Image (cartoon, rainbow, N blue to C red):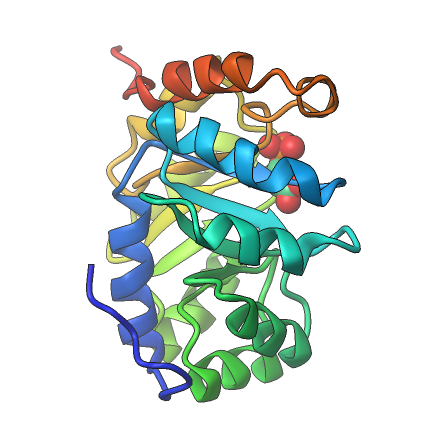
Length: 225
Ligand code: 3PG
């Protein structure tokens, strides 16, 4: 994977080229809510060992940025920041060492900041118009959010009819059971999900259990019809 120079501007097209590469690393990107900084490193090690190198740490806990810093040092990991809502979030994520960013949606200011700061952004979209607006700006790799409530795999399949150029990482309600249905679509590269890092397993320090969940997620493939 190409190194991105620090804080060099990055066009939406170049951002999507980078996020496509990251999305192709494994079928699932774990969506992580890190409550305790001490969990960051062993959690990342377990997920990477289980075959899930791309990790999304949501900026929803006080230690999230420090968790990104700690996880970024884990060999083989590609750590990104999720729940990016503002330009300040983009800057903070980049400074913490995030290699990509994820947002539930997209705003003009968020996109301008990702271009200026040079953080490959996976912006969220749930409707054809949102997909078209982002595609118009150069993004062709998006998060489909909230995946299950926005219509699930059938909705994404329908969007892929008229807009096949755009690929997705569906997130929100994705499970080991419905994941293969998404992964079978030609416009899905990977999916995001939080089930691989249950809170109880983190609290119990059950890193072997999380590695096993990751291993099973890494084996998920397209549903056979
Ligand atoms: C999130 O941002 O929390 C993601 O949508 C994860 O959703 P999930 O918990 O349904 O996997």
